[in-house]
Length: 301
Image 1 (cartoon, rainbow, N blue to C red):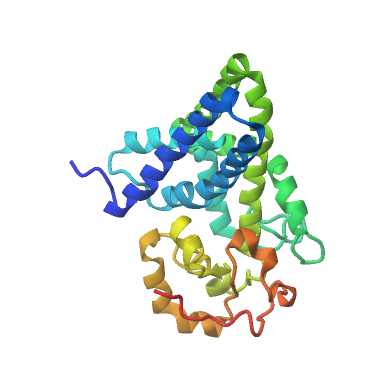
Image 2: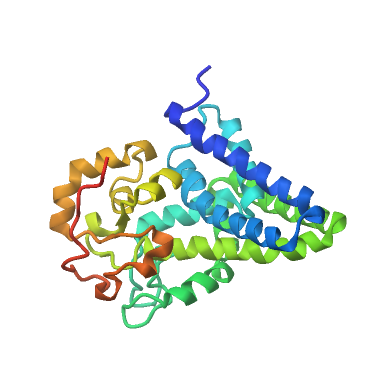
């Protein structure tokens, strides 16, 4: 039976997920024997790995499930959820709404279709301050409406999402019982990891144009970033064609490059998580076609 549903290259993110889980388990096992300065390094790496997983492995799983056998996808979702500390099922709903709204501006009632829109908590049509978005978004996510909606349409998925969260919470309680000091160490890095994911998400859209489909997202063609983050840098391309497999993003970019240039797609030089360091960042104005940084260069092969 064919194991992978789309591409043999999907063994790469699948293996990466297994290694991510192994890394977390290793952190717990070696904690009592590790110097504090090494613990700080491993904790920060785990924080970065949360954002890496959410924006790479988990994200691509939503659009193109890795396995042809559904139970394997469910099992993989569970493993991913307890490693990162969230529900993959809820993430899928939030992310689908993100694609429906494409970081839209609030309507006359102050609501956005995209629950993750950088404009949702901004003022006068401007994006929210990046640091407020980064550090407050974790506390704004409300899974209850998502659960109620899922319960009506896909009850098994709704309760599986609860199972994912309950599994992570149970493992945290067990870890508290076995070594409470580890959990005091773990939780701040866990929170920081999700903050880094929101920071990454902010600059995936800051300077994009919510009114032009080709320019909904902001792209980065940094080579190392795209290798490590499973081509997450091709974000304008991804929003234009969300079902294109992660291995085909460069090919898609080459096909629509001239259209992107005409639409004024914004390109930043650093990876999205470091988007605040982009030299052209002050020129970015939401919803305005910019000169200079909006030029679409050819991504290197």
